[in-house]
Image (cartoon, rainbow, N blue to C red; front, side, top):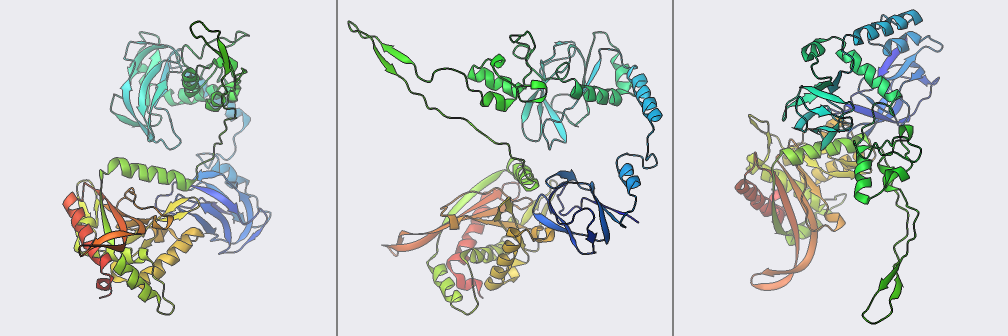
Length: 543
């Protein structure tokens, strides 16, 4: 019997996955434990093993495509097995209705038409739009029209705050604003009723209570995709309706119009590359006017003939490329953005003497089969300092603060796709060589995309080191739900004062980013004092 394989959830935060590579083709034999595909999650690209055996009968997500968790990934069964029933049932919300006859389609269309007729002609229900690819809900920052105002197609109805920015939302319709469904400052999911536009005097209650509201919206959406030039183009009421030479209306995106206006470019001179010839951002940015790049300038001096001097402007071709963001990159943007704008960060920096650390490391690494880095020493020192300052080893939970009794150190590791944070667990109980071995193993797995989700979860404190790139000091964004993150700079040889004399020394700057909701300035400073003691006296970490 054929088995449906769905897109797996390979990490706790994974919402969608991208098939990086298929390692089996349709028709190939599959054994339990075989690698079916490499799937890119929000954290890493991971191998996905088959839990079933048989023949790969169908691939539901092509290489490079992205789909939500639980989407149809593949079907495995007996060679020659009929899987049409599985494919049909996956395409409809009611598995029992695997086939739809032509007569049923006609009946369905008639039902939709009959329902849609219940909403008066000319009345449109405006839904909360999806203004970004990750937007799940929106907040009305400001209404620029109020109930009773006349609305023209292209007028700005409201400013809507998404998960990425606050954006102007233009009306697709003309009429009177009859109803506002979401007040200023309120948030609602995508597709919630935002407003109703129609003829003055329309019974709004009847419109809102009408069952076909969703059907009509969907019908209008479908029609808009087919007839975008006629009905659904978001355009400024002045610029978008500027006629061209043949008398046709110009269609352009709001951003394209704004850029054209700022640059003083006539939209009529630009050829659009969007749907139905619509002018989009890149068309305006790539537009090259046909004009001379040099012009004579006359400088008139009193009693003298004007002299002409050519002005040479740089010649070149602007270019750009839209690259699809990976799942990892989107999650990095989302998670770090949330951390930066929800956790009130403050930063504390100290400069530590690394002379003893350098000498101790040289002695440790002189032992056979032993390799300890300065970063390993910092990790161990942080773990020991956290034991003495539990306030830093916390997480903010709104009404409560969680004090972690264990110490799990996150280590920021750069990979080709972005950044991952493997976790060294119970770091305070490990020796320097154990920490070094654990970090080397986890970093290697991360860079070869073999790291497991469980190995990147549960950190209580994070260390980020850019010293190997010659960075003297920097600040990091807190890796939530941690309360702090330490930024480690390069070791610098420079003149220092010791015992009243100027001598050559080695120093390193450490910057602690703290979440002020859980860690106050004095607590962070005391943590750094303890950290300094351990780093400058490595022998204390060996006791």
